Every structure is written in C-alpha cells, then in structure tokens.
Length: 131
Image (cartoon, helix red, strand yellow):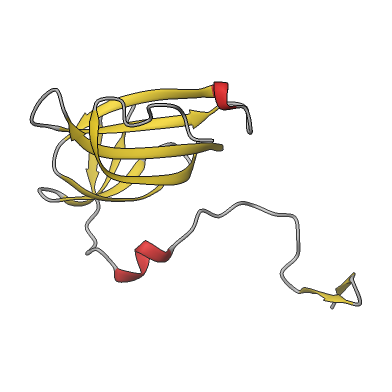
C-alpha cells in the first residue's frame, strides 16, 4: 500500500515508483500549496511490505517537468523547464546540468539490478544450461 496522505500539501503533477538507494520509493512531484514553488516528496519504504515503514523527505524544487529515475547514489534524474535535463541531489540540493538533449527513449528505461546469472545461459526443459 502507498503511504497515507502521500501528497502531503502538494497538488500532484506526477508520481512514480522507483528504486532509491536500494529501497522501494514513491516519488511525488507537485505544486507546493504553501507557496509558488514545486515540491518533491521522496517516500522510502524502509521495510518491504510494511506500510508503517514509509518515511518521507521533502525538497522544494523549481520548474520541474518530468521525473525519470534515481541513480544508485540517490540523485534524481529530472527534466526542468529552466535547466533542461538535470541530475538533482536531494541531500546537498545541488543541480548538475546534463549536457544531453532529452532523448525520447528515456521514458521507457527501467532500473537495473545486478545479477549473478550469466547472459549466455538458456533454459532447456526447466534446467539451466551453460553454453
């Protein structure tokens, strides 16, 4: 279940599930109802499957357009109206403008996870075979 009252003072623009520093996260971007800025709520589930373990960090941001994903170090990859495609660190509040155009395929990317499964394996009759 999502955290109760996950908008918490924001008019929602977008919400996305993501992996944030190895944990399930809900990223909520919205217009901050207490002022003319935008706000980002980062809800992190500290114990998977336990609704009471959701914790929230909120940061004010300006002019976001779209959230894409989180990096392994916890930076948010977002597109903003003023800065374009950026990496944003919610702890230090630093922006890093990425000097790339917004590629159309970026909306279709997914978080990756390391695996010990070899790429040259295939299944044959339910058994893993190594070539």
